[in-house]
Length: 614
Image 1 (cartoon, rainbow, N blue to C red):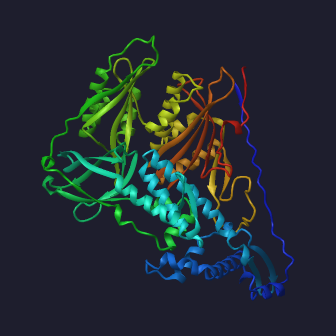
Image 2: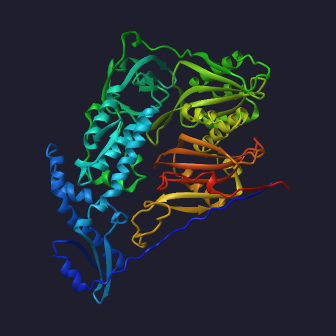
């Protein structure tokens, strides 16, 4: 089968021409109707940066009075706050600011200028960013992704506080026109108030000499899908812990009697690492005085009946039992549940050779790679499993394991998926997709049940490969002529004039195409530089080509990427072929940091697919 894929991207560029002479521009510098910045240097780009900084400094003086009421209760310096806020607007954001360049004997003289009446246009795009993060925060809150909700609300708030007319920015929310400078902080405080953390069990690991306190985390009575916290460990705060699926595990090293009866927990709402992917937010975080929410501090009491540690004794039950087809022979899931229980206990003992005895040859490699991915530890002693039959395989979902990475100072939870063969041999371990993501895929009406299971398995294998830095799998799964497009934010580049560029793709990012070899080579360097890589997917949309016999699918995913030195989020699209389920092929992969101006992202309809049987 031959496949042809093509993408055409049109990039526009524009240059600003001005009829003003130097004398005209010098006169404009004293005009009450214009704001003019000037820079002089031997290097043209350096002169331009000076002109921009001069222009921004003057704009900050124009708007500083608007920040006065915002800061009057924070004892902040208005001049300093105003200037640092305005300087977070990049070169690319200076819409309407014209430029004139003069080459003189002394060097380059650059002017940047804008009518005072037009200066508010500079801030319009940031308002749209506020609305965007606010909407993402609301969606995350609805889906119980509380870490994402808090982060997005907080970013919306700090962006809002750098807009001079912050007090008049509002939005219709639930039928009421809400003033955002009041609504957003109140929403953040309300989230803190709806989080409930409780101790569910306690145990002691003699091999590591660590007391483990199991906790449940609910938001408005429902298990959180994610929440980032730190907790006090006696003389310092712990490393950040990402709680998932409503469960978490607190570690206290040393004598088991030293576990406090009451301990402080801080909910993280502002991550500097996550901020790094958006240049404007990073500038605000680094340079502007930020609001603080003391409501993030909670107190957890360990009940008296949990004062004594217990040995690890997992209690595993079935939550659901599913079969792939009505006419399929029914399978007794109990032996597989018992095998899972044995493996879970071996994970606690870190007895990996014992686990390998339960595996097929293929399964052994997963034990070595996944269960030794960081320091693995069972999260909870009481779990309920989803069991389903898929062909001659049995798939067990819902095994919570916490992974710690000491070099990075990071912990997070993953739910594992075990795949067993007919002889109860463990064939594969993978990192599970979230319940919401699986539900989105299985809820598709255009694809049959067997295909849905295959797609869930494929996407979980894709996620697992990146987490394990499995370059062999990645090289194998991408077709040799795969179309790979990676979006990146436009940053201030002194060697590039960004004015008017990339209007097709949006105002903040550009797209770069890579060959398979280039992409894998980049991944190899990235993997080597980071102790861990972790992916999360949400909000997916599944589609299929119109050809009834085709096994080519497209899936759009909101991707969250975390690693030792970098974190970001964006939108992933994969076009893949499952004609051979043992050897799936990705023909198109795109990633973009934000949606297109019309709210869309790359999808199946953006690519030409020709399928011809040989």
